[in-house]
Length: 389
Length: 72
Ligand SMILES: Cc1cc2nc3c(=O)[nH]c(=O)nc-3n(C[C@H](O)[C@H](O)[C@H](O)COP(=O)(O)OP(=O)(O)OC[C@H]3O[C@@H](n4cnc5c(N)ncnc54)[C@H](O)[C@@H]3O)c2cc1C
Ligand code: SF4
Ligand code: SF4
Image 1 (tube, chains in turn green, cyan):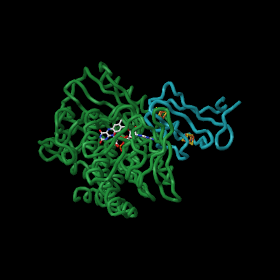
Image 2: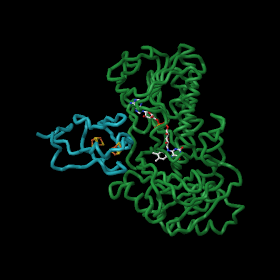
Image 3: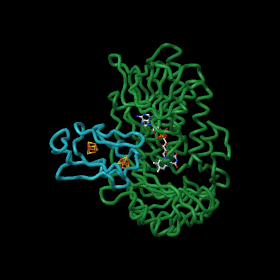
Image 4: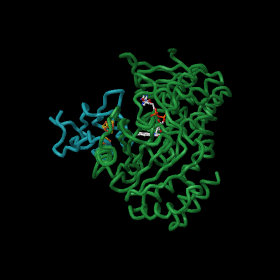
């Protein structure tokens, strides 16, 4: 490790290592600091990603793909199920431990340096400008300078706050999550299962994302506000007892997913935020792997350009670039999320009933949303926007 | 002796032995009053306003509201 780099990235999740890769590919010097012992572990994730985005970044490989998804199943509070069959692979369930590791290897092959067990605990400042980080590494407090710091430090991000950016997530928008990886269950390995209902997972959903016919990530997120009454863990225990009473539990993790629009400000003097740290998660699905990688690519390229042009103000173009590529869409997704989570159990039941009448070959997510929101015309306009982009 | 928050006694307590270090509480804390490392967590007393958001967000109920105040 040197004591000065062009760019320091805090956090070696998919967002951070993707930014590091795209910056390093332009020949600038990049250091990634990760607080945990391992890149990619622990896995606080249900591991679903859409195929199109994943393939854009990395050639598919069975080493990190545990299942191929071509169907979605939605289960209403009264337990009726509707299936959408896309007839082709739409997504993967990853083996994130290996996937994240692979992304880190790509970044390091591009020239980025990555160090684990390095906990960033502050920023260096030169006047108003961020000029590096302070970190705890092997029992020592160290200072490392850089022209740009990229905060990719996840849902627990503090880097932005240290630079004076307001990053905390409203309780309502924080999905408080608990997940197990369970075996000794029976599932279709090509289907993602989503369960809704106020006794199932209020202000969020309960998921069963299969890794094989007998293993799945089973978890849920509830709106942080709901946690006042009953915790995510308590909801999960109830759902498991009801639906998978014989499951063996191979792993269990808690987690938090920020499901909101992106932060208003994701850049400041010498600093850029991305991934969960910038609240770049798709607020409707809670998926943040793909969007973090997209944010990482934009941020990495712009940061390297700023260094190469010796024009640090160039990093401010990142906000607009993100907004145009994803941020705008997330505003629409967020309105949809708010619409959906205002539904009562009866609303959900009615929607599923109507959707069941649609022949299997004509079922699409768009159609489901149109039915779901038929009584909310203003949301229909938003939906059409989503499916036009 | 009680621990002191930004104003008055600290009323929020994390049970570190039970914590999963997931960061959900850090994400909702408006005061940047939680420090989370790989396998350790603590409240930064002088920043905390006892707002309780972390208590509600914690997926596994390991942050407690202690109305008596947390002893040092
Ligand atoms: C239960 C659960 C299920 C999920 N399921 C899905 C899913 O199916 N599909 C999907 O797309 N998304 C899912 N997500 C969201 C997804 O996991 C995140 O959006 C994604 O990991 C974000 O990537 P990131 O790189 O921004 O952050 P992270 O992957 O969280 O990486 C941030 C990294 O920064 C490190 N770090 C933090 N602070 C510091 C510091 N001070 N110093 C050094 N390092 C630091 C952390 O240790 C971490 O490794 C889920 C999340 C949860 C909690
Ligand atoms: S009580 Fe409020 S201020 Fe204190 S640690 Fe929790 S969220 Fe932060
Ligand atoms: S939310 Fe709960 S489990 Fe997660 S880090 Fe905070 S105290 Fe620990």
